Length: 431
Image (cartoon, rainbow, N blue to C red; front, top):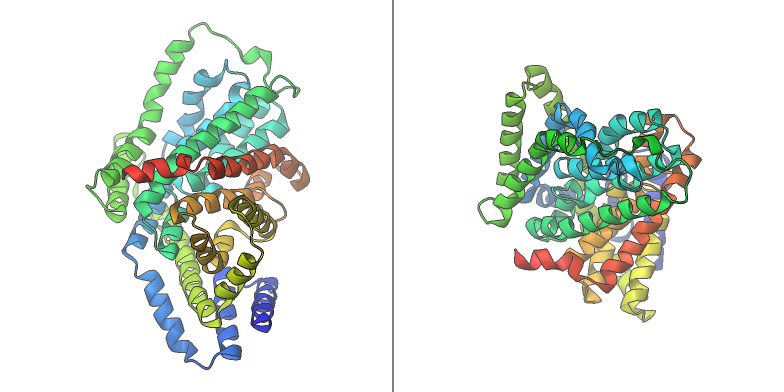
């Protein structure tokens, strides 16, 4: 069995090192390992695994939520977001840096993607913060950290994929992400408030003023209502039992088109660009899901999950020690693998281990998404860092150092939900 494990890991690194697509690399690992160590019809197993992986009804929601995000990305609401949030945070310690966190939180309600959230909010906030004299490192770091909320706050694309691969309720996963997402956003804002007293230029004094501020706040509310209204309708319909995730996703697309018609930002060009963008993203994710389903079955035939689980159980780790070990492993892998790849590659091994240790799969889904968020801001393959580098032309090292405090906040948050799992499990228990 050690030979099979070493060979499988070696094949994976060789294929990933060639620059091949992650999905094709995962399929190659499964095909190569089964051919070497098992006498079974690999072609039939591959076809059956792909069909089973892609025929889940929950996956219908995936392209629809992506299409909703593509449409709203091209609407006028995103452009108005900074102006709407500015009067609410101007006088807080940390000032307009909070627009990064709040902006990402609102956009996460419609995006489901970490990179898309970082890009959409960053192109609005970073030039404004730079123009107003805010600390550049704090601007980049807060955007990098808050951009990861796109994975945690529903509707999350990666939550749908985790639900399908782990056979967990997507509705309950969506519910599980709400409180952790909001608490993590508050922790980011708390850090910005504290740092404003110690870090130079965190909050230029010229930004503070109180005269007429309530008038500005009230005028900005209409720009925030579409985000809140859309998610209230989508999530409310699911939690009330009126719609499945797929039906709620279709409702989201319909309401988005209606809102864009009212604001006169919907055109055939926008529809065409949004559909093409959604098709590309959904196709990429579909291929990864198909490959992950096959690799999961292949690893089961090879006995790798059972072997790794038995080895870790032989270490006789306590629950906290086990979570610490998994956290260290995921942080290390996150330095070299993109978040989606990290999840689909490790789930076949980790799920049996976690369930055997008595952890709830919904709780572990939130844990896994948080550590995947960490992978988004760890060099050298942190996707959010590359997005910010494209927006700022700053050196990668400086962006990574700016994101470090927010990475450490996520580490603390992992232990917070470990000691207080009710943060994750309370809302799913009500659904």
